[in-house]
Structures are given as structure tokens and as C-alpha cells.
Amino acid sequence: MAGSTPTRATSQDDDIVTEPLGEIIDPENFTPRLLALLSNALVWRESHELRRRFRLGTNDWRVISVLALRPGSSATEVSEFIGVNKAVVSKSVTTLQARGLIRLVEGPRGSRPMFLTPSGAQMHHDMLPISMSGQHLIHEGLDPEHIQQLNALLRRMIEQVRDAPADVVIEAPATTGTPTAGR
Image 1 (cartoon, one colour):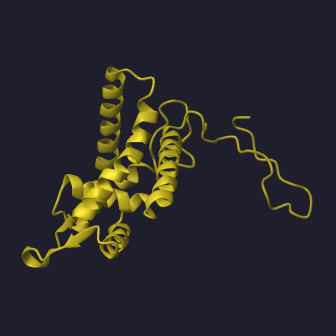
Image 2: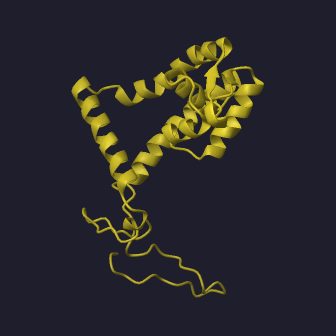
């Protein structure tokens, strides 16, 4: 079908394309799709369980998790660390403050460092196994060397994407026979 022209309908809806286009993404070999599917599946499982058990979502867990690792981080620092918009973090901060799980304090030059409360530290302890179960699913059947290689490869990809100019995606050459259309 490669290189074929789209078939057009002949009914009253003759302005619609009814056949697959010739130049498309191979969904089984398009790495961004595969990574997104994996991420979405893990986030859905985690989010469902966090909401069911704690009435908190994945973004709330991410903020708690960062503050467990980096106490005193600001909302901006948290958003940069987890790679989401600051508005997403701010919404979680409001929720977590209302639940008494974090506290913001006055910092230098008007900053607002955030810290877990004892209840927040306990919540981290209670939520951690849910997040770790996702990692267990991914690691199951892999030996430690493959896990190390996988993580190194993922870190390299993340760095590559972050360092790439925004316009490079538009004109990226197809390197594995996968068309660039639709990226």
C-alpha cells in the first residue's frame, strides 16, 4: 500500500478519506508510541490504586516522592524534576497542604520551600509499594545487567530529547524505514 493515493468515498460524504494512507507510522515499531503505551499503562495502574486507597493521584504521589528525596524543594524545582508543568504541581500542592501532608515555609527572597509533615512521611511509606510494583512489572524476567542497560538507554534518550532544538522534530530523517509523517 506504500505510495498509494487515498481512496475517497463516493457517497454524500465524498470529502472524507476512507482508506489508510500510504505513508504512515508503523505502530508496532514506533518507539515514542511504545514508550507512551508503557508509561500510560503504568500510570493508569498506579493512579487507580492511589485513588482507591488514598484518594490521591499520581501527581500528588510524585510531589510527595520528590519531597521525600529532596526536602525543601520549591514547586518550580519539583516541576522541573518530574518534568511537568508547574500548574500541575501547584494543584497537587494545594491538595497535599489541605490534607496536612506537606507544609510550605517562608524561604529566602520570597521562595516557598516545601516539606513533608510526619503524616506526609507516613503517606510516602504507604504509597511507595504501589509505585514500586510498576517497576517490578517492568523488571520481571530481566537480569540485573539488562535492567542497567535499559535504564542507561532511557536516560540517554531523555537527555537527547531535552537537548534537541524544538524544530528538529519537524524535519527529522527517517532512520529505520519509519516515515516521519505524523510525528
